[in-house]
Length: 511
Image 1: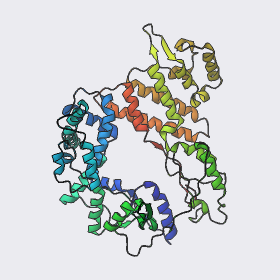
Image 2: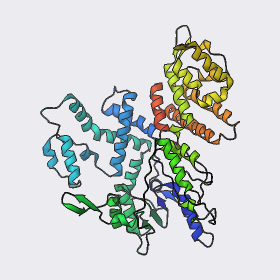
Image 3: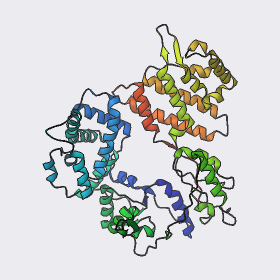
Image 4: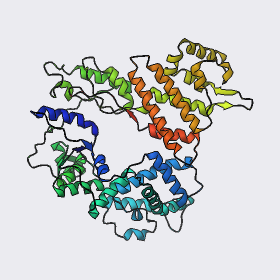
């Protein structure tokens, strides 16, 4: 069984267990990306390694003098574009054509709809071939070399037997077209809950449908399939519901079983809107709504019809997750956090950011004296982990530095302490920086182990340690030497997408 998110597997297995009178083997439950990975064995490299490879290709094809710092923001966008090109099976030669000459727009664009063609015309209308600004000339020089960059980058990945996700999708789709795809490792496949399919996914699903080994289920309420009534100058008109755009196409191309009865509520649902003074106030209002829901009563703790199992709290801002969890009434004793907590919102991440700021502003004189900017030093000493470890000594040190009222503070004015000796160490290379941060996090982790209520905090520190360790491993394999500023940027790129998973799920818990 394949679904958009692996987190649904737990609930599916629980429901399957309730419906099955005797023990059975659970089907393998994966995401559709996992299926592509089984049909195309070439490994998908991490984004940072891909950025370095793309950087090498860019210097050979376009500009050999560009620095890595200048390239990274552009390289991230370029890598995302290449990923989309492959997932939608676009031709890079045609996509990156110079359409400044309006006659080129008269060529065959039958594969695009009218809105897309008009968007292309609007963009290129400002490019007068007879009058190009310096910025436009620079853009065209890059634009016209994009197909060559795409080829050079992909040829290098072919030599190294690596891929990015879109390339893996395209390789699988090409194998299907060439009839060289390997044996599908399943007798039957069920696809559930997919929505906006790219061209590679459509080709794969169609291939499995023709082979007769695929069943499809689409997740949608019936009422969105009906054309809604909309007001206009001409009166009331009916138009397509925007939520049904992809569903209608999916149902037509990959129909569900004829005997399937859609369990969705007819809807639309009742909606109550409440006002909150600020973001944190939303969590208190949510708690009030939860208090209005009756307790589980006679519903068993593992029954799917328990009221709490039918309740979900959806946050628009992930940063509110911890305040929301703390605001949940005590009666709600079981909670499923379906998404992990963003690593970038943790105190551990804040500590690393503070250390990076201190490293960047730290200055060492020819006489060997080290100076700190007072705000950055005090910010570090006031961090919750540091104040907990240093205790009374830390508070006294902060008060002493504030009383001294110095803009820059010399290291010799700070009393010796095992923690401050490690924190205030100057690093000169990215290798030193990686080890420095790992050592600090190890020390913090060991201290948190003494507090039995700090399990979650230890998880934050542990996952951040793994992220920094992974970054160090990636960079050690590169020939290009990077600056601490670039290291910081790459660290943020890695950490921004990392989440800390929460504990075991419960079927009767609210989500």
